[in-house]
Amino acid sequence: MITAIARSKVNLYLHVTGKRADGYHLLESLVVFPELSDRITIRKGKELSLEVTGPFADSIGSTEENLVLKAAHLLKSESRIDAGAHITLEKNLPVAAGIGGGSADAAATLRVLNQLWDIDFSDDGLSRIGLTLGADIPACLYGKPAIMSGIGERISGLQKFPKFHILLVNSGHSVSTRDVFNRLRITGEVPPAGDFNAATTRDLFAGLTPMRNDLEMPAREVVPVIGEVLSAIREQKGCYLARMSGSGATCFGLFEDSEAAEAAVHALRARRRPGWWVQAAAVGP
Image (cartoon, rainbow, N blue to C red; front, side):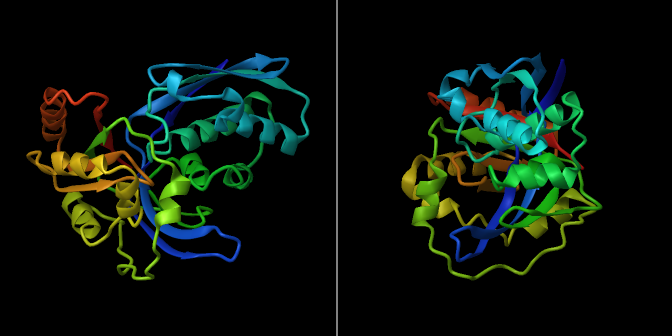
């Protein structure tokens, strides 16, 4: 039996730079992986099966359509191995929330099965397989602060990256990525690329200020409460920047220290908004 964590993924900025002839969108994004995660446990079995537990288990829907099981079947097919596994997914992260939960789960599954089945696929091989299931999976396989670009296949790690703290807030509303992209209007206006090999937190935060998430406005058209969430985060003492992650609906606030981030958690939870998921976590290199 092997257990692995599947950390949340947050897009500190996300620029949609174009669209290919085949319909895939081109993007550039700085991604980080806060210490909030799902958990994957896998043991050998005759067939491939998936069990889902945890606070968000009821939000998963059909296990047959889950990225975890799809990743397992695809790896089995690619490796031409006759093996099975029983997979348990402890779902601690909200679903369809823009923080890469499903992609992180699939990435962790690929890594664990690669080890359990003794396949010995390279990281590039696993990324190639993962990309066919989702644009975030290569970045989740990398699992460290990086610039992702192209359709998600190009990952550029950062040599220097400071530690900071992040507040994550989800209103309980799921957002369809398809609906968001259908409403997206690509302007082609992209801020100059920044150097995010930042030595200090202040340098990083300053570099992020002119950036944006191009999916935020279309996501707010689909789920207007995102605007309320962002306003609530911006009101918190010590919050340097508030933005939406991915295609939504999770939003984040950036803080220099854990005390300010935890104070924001307590303040937002005291509002007793039904369905709001509020967490803080460290982010580091």
